[in-house]
Amino acid sequence: MSQTEERAEGAGPFTTRLTHRLTADVTSVWESRTARKRGALTIRRDATVATRHADAQGLRRLRILNTVVATAFTIGGALFVLGAAVSQFGSGNPLESATIYFVGGLFFNTGAYASMLQTVNAPRRGGDAGTLETRRWRWWSYEPLQIDWLTTFVLFVGTLEFGINLLDSFLQGLTVQQTNRLIWAPDIIGCLLFLVSGHLALVEVSHGPLRLRPRDLGWWIAAVNQLGSALFMVSAVADFTNPRTGTQVNVAVTNWGTLTGAACFVAGGVLQYFEHPGPSERP
Image (cartoon, rainbow, N blue to C red):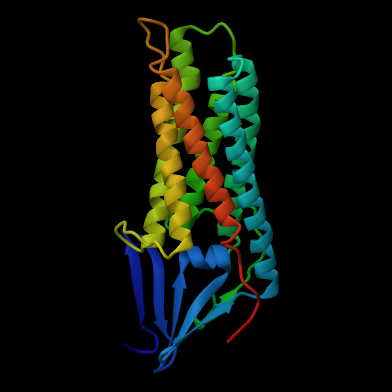
């Protein structure tokens, strides 16, 4: 392999890992999740492996955003657990549960947008492919062919769909048709978007077809969150109101699906505290 040749891995149009030969015996390995979460790439020299990080400014940004993301999803998930528990075991007052869910949804919005900011402002590969460069701060970008951007963007849109569902749940006196259109439909769309985002996240850490990577913390985070998304979908399907009877398909399944799915997002949020950028050091 020549000094300018790269080996790309990924799925479809997405590149998730690039191996670049810097010299005859030195290669750099860039991975999209590692770069945006840890601000790092790997340098391999013969039989030794070292980590090269972005500069102090870039790592500081990622640490702050990582803390916001982890905290927001942990608190948001915990509030959804509480809302489902109140609905299943509490007074049964729908307004009480709706209020708890709505506040939890705001934390999900915050966590998803911070995740996108982490992607937008992640260090990029330098000119020699062996370094990471910190670029100017941005609040937004449009990079649909970058799997990390697409994953976080779809997640953010999903949280906004959930926001519509949660806001509409405060409406009173709705017909069955209105309930399904204004509350249930946004819930289903939000769940679908969460599942798409979770699938892309698993593709990103698998660098191609989905596979088990039990030693990879990023894989565990993506897998746990995807399980949470699947449980949210089960909950949403069971929340459909039958036009003939005017009752939900299964209230208990709705509550338990929400509770266990939210618990998965709490676990994913806690795990993200450990997937933080490392020290600014260069081998």
